Length: 605
Ligand code: ASP
Image (cartoon, rainbow, N blue to C red; front, side, top):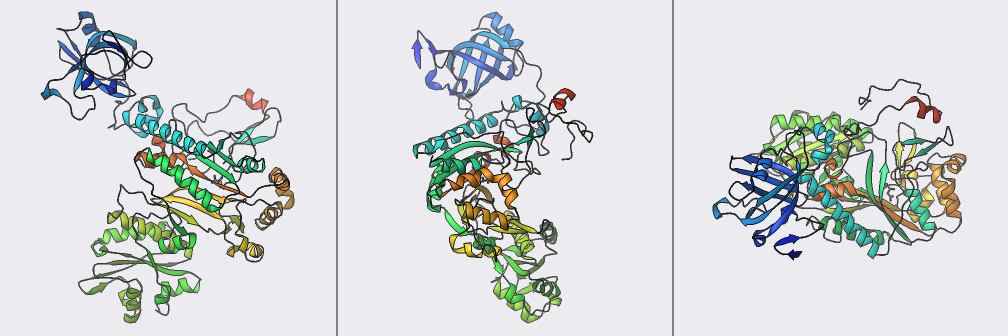
């Protein structure tokens, strides 16, 4: 900061309003920003002036300020852009505002100029707003002016910068890969871009830079990263966007440990920006342990609340739902909720509905309180079976036992949801805690019932464990992958693997996936070719930058950390896209619509 004859000049030509403090009293300052609040008491007019650095109170006082400035201040409206000069003055003790960082001072103005006038905004630009998200997204420029949104995007910038620096310092090269490319299968539909010059042919927007980063390893770069935009045309949920950003990483000659080490450092940097610790090493669980213990491969480990295997205890109970599930190759599992006898009938009905939503046929509950056992199924269960179940679940006085008997998939999915709901009800998760973990040893493949074929659990380039390779054709279900996910508080932050680096193995995996030789060549010929010219063993991961920033900012919606997000039905309300295209550009592309377009903005979603 330079002091020039009482007028302080910093930055280009003005002072950051939000940084003025008591120590600045006596200085003349030049401020530029938005009128955030205005109070007109006749001889005294107060503004709050807002710029990126925060808010400061400005005072126009007839006693101390030229009349024309006071007149002008009287015409100011919210969100007008102004330039003003004045003196920083200490406020009287009684008038200090302890809630504002600049609350000890105010700026007594001597000049005011309007740089731009604003119409009445459709909602007030403040953190506490009752504007609907639709209105906020339509006028995103106003929404983004709110201090909380400014903080979120500043945090995102800082986190991204720290990640870049950490990776650069570890020898990773940032290399861009194309947006107009060929489809990379990550399990979603592609966004297609028609080619004008090659009429009838299409590019796909990348679902991820997966194949390019592998090819960069074949090309000898050894360590790559990219803050990469990815595009997936899938049904949107609250924490998904059609386009999102990944911290995409790949390295040559790595073991899983090298990837874990890099990622733990990167996440430590990113969360560190928000003062959140990511203590290393992260806990590790195999996929199987995670499923059996928590029913999900993205467990919230802020609390334990494990599931119990009740299959043995349930066997021979004569209880029809148990018998039916076991005969069909299913399972009986339960969740002991300590202190859960306090759950009301209504709560239990809600939990039953939740179990059904996640594919279970129903939910059985048992309560143990005041030495008595109560359950809707008490009369259908023998004394001995009931005793076995309670013992297997280690039910104690005051506990509730929730039991699901069904196909394993439904059992796990519903108990995982019940576990999360019970934890919420019992306040088990410490909101300030971040429990990071690695989930490893995923199955390579899963059976796709609808398509009646094997599909990759991750993507088709994931390496099988070498010791399982011999099982690939005969027992694909037994093959485990060198794949891993990094998880925090029930959110999957990233997913990656050691890749297949031999063309013969890649072709075998394609075959098991039902991809014919011809199709394999047509879709991935360039990869197979590259693997034939000396490919190093390689592996990597992609971390979801939007989720990381949302968690670091303490918001549950990734839309709060993306400057221009789309709605959950994929609309950009500010630019009004998608939108119909005129006939001429379509004709250039050789496209005629065979179905009438949906009315603008409606779509199917
Ligand atoms: N390309 C993968 C994805 O986007 C991540 C990886 O395997 O590195 O999920």
